[in-house]
Image (cartoon, rainbow, N blue to C red; front, side, top):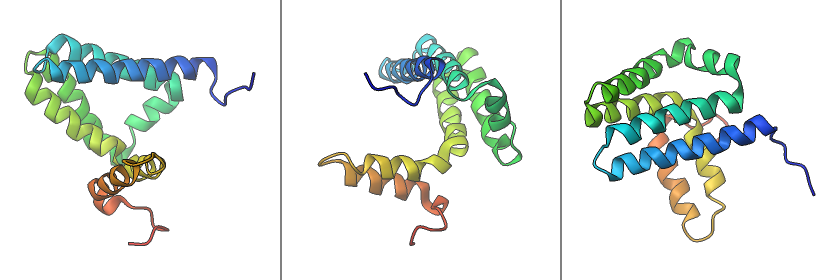
Length: 139
C-alpha cells in the first residue's frame, strides 16, 4: 500500500478540519445555531493545530500582517459564544478571508482540474482574491 505524505497527526487534523467545516455548514443551515457554529470553530482550530503544529499555528495567527484577521476571527468566535451568532459569523468570515485570502488563488488552481465546474470555481476564486494574485501570474 502506498504511503501518503501526511503524518498520522496531520491526517487526524484533516478529519477535524473537515468536521469543523461540516459543523459550520450545519450551523448556517440551522439558521445560525450557536452550538453548531461554536463546535465547528473549535474543531477547525484543533484540526489546523494538528496539521501545521502548535508553534506554526501561533506564528501564523500572530504575524503582523495577519493581526487584523486574527482579531476579527477571535471577535467573531466570542460574539457567537455571547449569543450573537449572525453578527459573529459575519465578522468571523471577514477574519478568515483576511487570514486565508492568500490561499484562494492556490485553491482555485487546484479546483480548476475538477471536470465541468472546475474552471468556474477557479474563475470565481481568482475574482474573489482580486489583488492577491501572485506576481508571476499574468494579470
